[in-house]
Length: 229
Image (cartoon, rainbow, N blue to C red; front, side, top):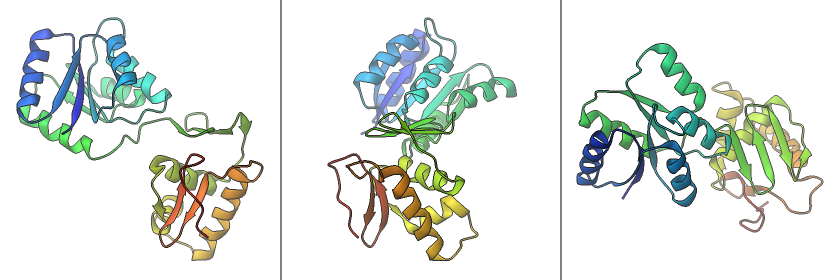
């Protein structure tokens, strides 16, 4: 059963949406301002956030931007009466995944929520694993406060691994992330993964980058997985 958070200050609309979504089998919490929404996001695990742009105390754009800066990858559907291109661009720049312009049909809302619930947001701008922090906006990488340097290819490989963490990523998927459809020979991936391991784990006592035998590689916090060579 999927759990949603609706942040909407129009109480009549919010009541209608909550009732409809619950009839469709969702659990739906409701708040009427962004600060209350932020507090619930910290306390609960949600599959999709439905955020109205114009809310008191903290609007939908501000709330979305805050959670993205914190590394939260919950998919966000922005509900708004503002349908101009510039308005949509502001939303996407803040980290929203999809837009729904008011007034909308309930069936369309349902379809978009279900589509978003199958994935995590690609809009998150800060990825973390234990003491490893990857800031996509600033193009910076820190482990335990120490700055790490990667090649452009190493950066793409690590971003792919961090987004999937702690799940493993296949060699094929890593090669797609690093080189697109134009794959080099398999030795190139081995070399880049060796250099990535050296950068991420080389001077530290605990390993984060693990080779998963027969599968690929994974980035995992200390104590959650062993390296299979």
